[in-house]
Image (tube, rainbow, N blue to C red):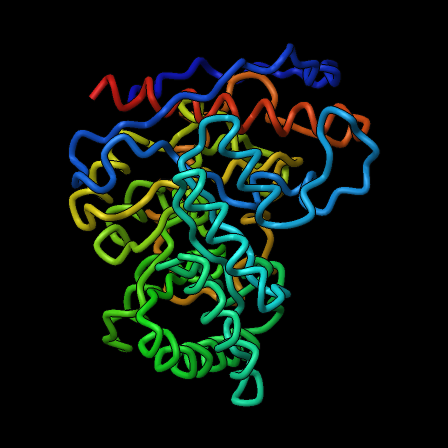
Length: 365
């Protein structure tokens, strides 16, 4: 994928840029010629967080009604051409897993779960129930995270970070025997917490075929890691993916980071897909296109650095060069100026455009 960008021009006076046209009529399939027969022709799937506005939405919208559960999400994603979903499992009733399985089989879609790690031994009953129900619904991969927030925002001291690491390792060690028992793969996302090498070390130290990575293509830019270096490091351990492209732009405390339409950001999507296929031909590709205001990465503030050890100046310089040389043209997407219905329109259009782009990208290989 070519990523040639014009130098950024200030657009501070243009705050109404988010007026969108009608939705594309359909999303297109993502046919991977390198995949095994079981996955050939499987379109890209959708991660539940791509619909953060519609999931459980209370907005009264006839065109974009809220999704109340995984079946609502699955049906909608199938209608726009997606090949599967990755969705939360928490709170499922005993009989709901069978309903999800029946719907999944009827629609011919893949399913991946999203699950919380056990906090301690007393949380294992909840964790095992969710693993069992996800397996019954047909999920063979369960995405999880160690941190729900962001490393540079959650931790104010190095001691807090060390405690988090210790607790995370304990949680994963508690989870491993259960996923091994049910023979489903637990995939830990690089979720603005672990730098790529740290997550690899964690996986290697555990040394279990049932624990790997959900490879997010863009999160680690927030930790000043170049996205393709992260993907090259984590692809050998990837059991699932969060496909996204990222736009970057400088601001006074560091830089702004935003999910943008596939093909318009700094991620080399073609190489990223090829690497994932190389190491795991069974891997699925799931879109995580989060429609929101840009995230502020305050890397010029002292508070940002409290959890990082032995950072090399050249790494910092590299990410700043990336921001300078590939600054997103125009303004990064924002939703704060939109009313609820406009936000739903924008969210849906983002998902559909990204699904459509996936076919064009692969056909250009």
